[in-house]
Length: 183
Length: 302
Image 1 (tube, rainbow over the protein chains, first blue to last red):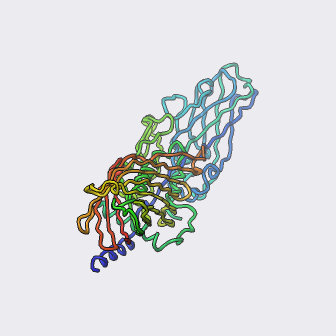
Image 2: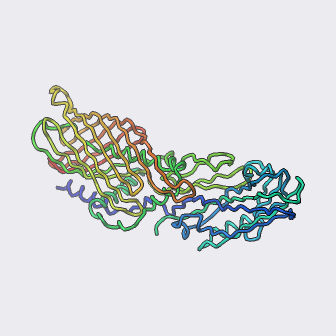
Image 3: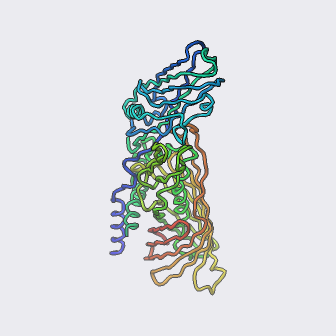
């Protein structure tokens, strides 16, 4: 009988002990869909180009994370061009809310494949101020609209006139951290 | 001692859940663990979740027996509450993940589902960073529990049925567990054998939340010998297990995830000790294989 009581007591003790086997917080790092825009370069006499687009970052992340974001980071930015052109692009700038995020320059052919901040490409240079603005924006609740713009100048290959069918695309790869512990 | 403490700490809620809390707390749509897993794309989730496949597989094939003595004929019945736990080692808490294309170095160490904070990949050329997710479970023992019924015996054969619906508790998903096994006395054919011998085959299925389905199959031989109220038992078994993982990822690109992961254990050796007090049976064993596993139980029966 004494042994039975001991066993019953043991079971009661087992069932009343705390359960702390789930981490708190649980920070999951989510890759957003790329913040990406392409800007068409107008054909004609103007060798300078500019383009701008407003982006809603909340559309680039699963709804379930929008109010759980605690941190954000940019893990790559790429620039790529499309269209046939044998000249170069100079003074290229990608801006976030008007602040330079990245500068780029090189021959048009250099950018026919995406030029990434990663690796050793001499054609793209990140700008800390713009990256800070983007990260700050991605940490706000609710996520604010952001404006992504690009400017630059075409040189060589007989411009002007600028041939038709040219465009520049910038893609920002960002990751946000969300705490999924509890609701 | 630390393992024992955490074993008790983590097994307890499962026992509590199965005996008291059925259907309570089941309204939460998604557990914390499920939300953490769904943050991974198909090509990223394997390293994160693999230890869970290993531990589930090891747990599911544990606790099927605590004696090899099976009467040749006559009605026998016992009801058992069994807890199993697999040891979560430090090597189960981190895995090597791929950094984004172009990162130098191309891989980094980060947390599995049993890990702590996620690791960070830092590109040596640019200083850009990419982070892995945190682990979701803080445990050095991964538990499972079952109610188990042994019914026999006809020509030295008994049937074992186990199962348990565990509701979602403290962020761990709802678990539906069912298993069935058959054991047959070998020693009835070996009357001079100094120990009782039996052979058995055991099958389990577990649905863990909405994402995970596990299946396992084990077969092997067992032996036991009684010394008054004490009984020493052990066995060898071949086993296989697989985890089917299906969900829609909440991260960018390739949202539909569907993959199968095999559990690490393929062979186990078991050694255990039981205490038989009339209709009360208390027993515990250690299972050695790729995964180290413990099981313990309390049974009432004859």
